[in-house]
Image 1 (cartoon, rainbow, N blue to C red):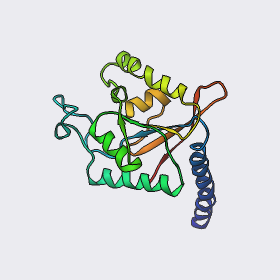
Image 2 (spheres, rainbow, N blue to C red):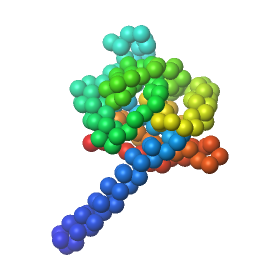
Image 3 (cartoon, rainbow, N blue to C red):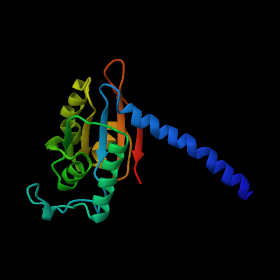
Image 4 (cartoon, rainbow, N blue to C red):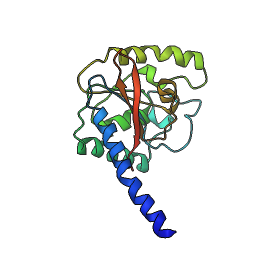
Length: 183
């Protein structure tokens, strides 16, 4: 029984590696979009009195989150992935994740979403969807944001530090090519 289980695990491992390779390859396609959830930040929400201009009032990355973001950046470099614009929620945990992973970032207010108001979040994400639609070629567009925004954009619920790759379809719409979490 143990031998059978070991054989099953070993036979599944190469297919998982091939699936990961396909996701990394999807990033090279024209019009690809990479949506990153910020790295690990302890807790669940910013305090009610959090201010965008003051990181000390927000939920931030800890050393685990910083190490996670650096590993993600190393994975992008190891796979020779060059990215285009890196747009991020103005929340400090997202900006720091973007800097550690990609070395560059442009804050974009709409990527912070609106957790407590679904209608407002939907409206805020209209320009994000427009930017995705307009991204037709060149290196991937990167969006660094929060779990609720990623769920709204992709229908997926991913963990902190993971990312989703969206491939541009024949008619301009984006479809999920896959998601990855770098250990």
